[in-house]
Image (cartoon, rainbow, N blue to C red; front, side, top):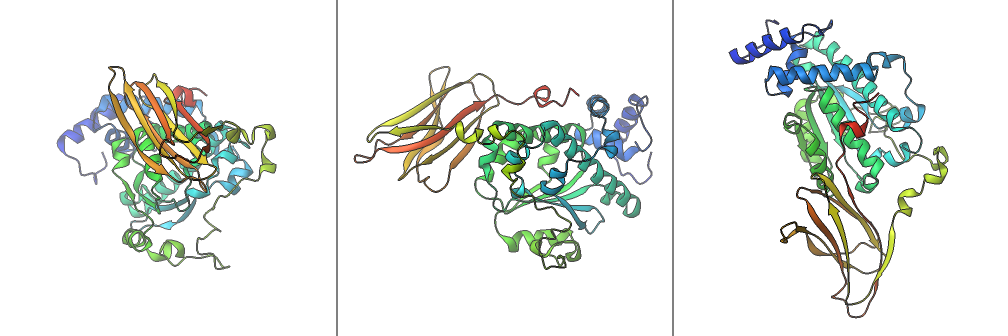
Length: 395
C-alpha cells in the first residue's frame, strides 16, 4: 500500500479487500491510487467497486481503448471540437478549457457517426489522463486530476432539443461516469445563462454525487468567476480572456492556438445533404385563434422521460404552460402559465417526467380578443436513454 495514503481504518480495510478481489485483472499501473478512484466512486463498497471496475475493463476491451493511440481522430473533429490544455493549476494538475458554446453538435453528427464522436472523446480523455499521470509523478497526488473550465458564453440549448444531439450528450456523460471515476478535481462552469439551468437539471440526473459536488456554476459575472479561477490557477497558465496573461502572438486573448474554439460546421461538409434541415422540418405550424387555446397532450409511459418544447411566434406574444394529469386524476402544474414573447428567438425548455401520466402543453391566446397567433412548435417526449441504447455495452 502506498505509504503516503491517509486512510481511515475502514477505508484501508476496504482497499485491501478490493485489491484481493480484482487481483486477477490488475494491470501494470493499477496502483492504490487507481483502485481508490473506484472505491470512492462506490462509497467505499468493495463489492460495488469491483463490479464497476470489471464492467469498465470489459468496456475498454470492446471499444479497444488501449489501441486508440493508433486511431486518427477525424479531421473535422480536430478542427471543430472545442477543447484544449491551457496550462496547469497551482498543484500541477492540467487545466482544460472547453468553449462549450462553440460545439455545433448538430453539424458534427451530420459529418461523423455517433461512434466516431464517442471514440474521439475517449481518446481525448485517455490523453488527458496520461498528462495527469505524468504530472502526478512530478508534483504528487494533487496533480493527478483535471481542473476543467466550461465556458457557456452564448450557449444555445436549442440544438440539444434535436434528439440525436441530446442522446449523444447523455451517452458521453454516462460513459464518463461509468469508466472515468474521480479524475475530476474541480469543474468551473462560467457564463451560465438562465436557460442553462434547464440543461443542467437534466444532465445531473446522469451524474454521480461525487461529480456534482465538484462543479461550481457562475453566471455571466466575469469579476467573480475570474477571481475564483485565479485562486487555483496561476495567471501565466490562463488565457487573458479568463483572467490570466496568456495570449496568442496575434493577440487572440482566448489562446485559440492551443484551445480549439469550435464553430459552426459548414453545411457543405454534411455527408447526408437531404437530412441537413431535418430539425426544422419536424416543426408544426398552427394558428391559435383569438380567445382560444391550443392544448397538446402527450403520454409519459417511462419514468425519467424528457418532455421538451421549442416554439416561435410569427408576431406578438402567447401564454405558455405545462401541466400533468396524474393517473389518479389530480392535476399538477409543471411549468406555470406565463406570457412569452418569442418572436425573435425560439423559446426552449426541458422537464423530466418524474411521474407517469398525461402531460399537457398549453398555448393560451384566450386573453387576446383581436389577434390570431401563428406559431411554429416542436413538442415531444423522449424515453430515457439507457446504456444499451447509447451503444456503451456493445462494440
